[in-house]
Length: 202
Length: 202
Image (cartoon, rainbow over all chains, first blue to last red; front, side, top):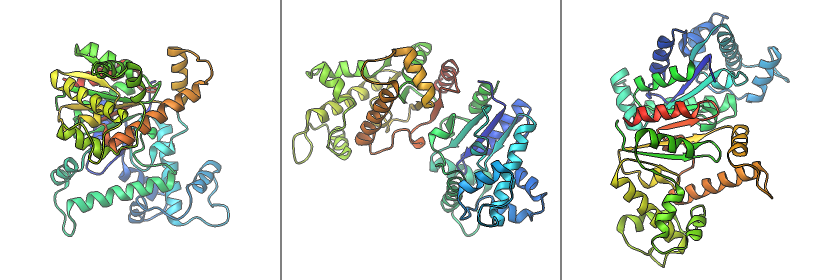
């Protein structure tokens, strides 16, 4: 049952990023979030801003093609050149596969649970919470932002993540079947959840 | 965050019943499974066999009416007499509400998470696992049965539970939003899950 890789998917504001970081610190293993993965992808030549934007953008190419491209190490989908968005997804996936190969680690976001689905050593976690709790947490952690209410930001972020995940994986984001453990952080404190992750990892 | 009531919903063969029993023993609190709840309902005058059968049967009355009947302590739905199936659901719900009122406890099945949704002291857990793992566990725990393969039994039980839950609650069985903690027991051993439940309870 021992696991080497922890993947964390999370609703916006539920504390999944913080939880991943805490778990990585406790386990003394690397922590990779979206920013780190995007930065690795940008090293391959894309503009960092474009990589960041693409990371929550779902292109029109079907996930079947991405899997084909990924598994055959080719650079184009049958019938045509891949768009830049598609190329970035593939670069992200290869980055994640390579990071997982290097050493035990915690990876947050970017469909890591799906990208590493063939491995038997992943513990896949989904972190969620009630809307009211997340709104309060977003306010505390990130503060107000001009032009958008917290409810709008929350809704927009979750929708992007849901569409991105659905598009690239053909699965439903937050579907219980894709995770070994799901935690509502409005009820389970992060400190307790970290202990559980450490338990399951060792 | 301290919780008094633990409700467990579970896929057939995933070990939810065993987990609930283990948690109740560790916490030294009563354990109520379907058989115990059905027996309490049978004491109100229904035949025990009929109560057991009704417990996985979804009648044609809409859940809205059950909520109305439950919350107003009346015995008939507006516009007509309730069927025996409906009456049994209501008796089960009242039994569960009364058990939860008496003392901390573990309740397995029978939509307890939904029936107790107004309480703030419930920890709602969903226990699931991959099909192959559950098939193997069913074989070990319950053995073969004449006339049906294990895959058929598993499929039939899950479908009944899913329809029963959907019918009486207007929610989806296994929808992450309805649980504070979900556990895949093919990856998280029951002994570990019990420790976590004890953690969250205390």
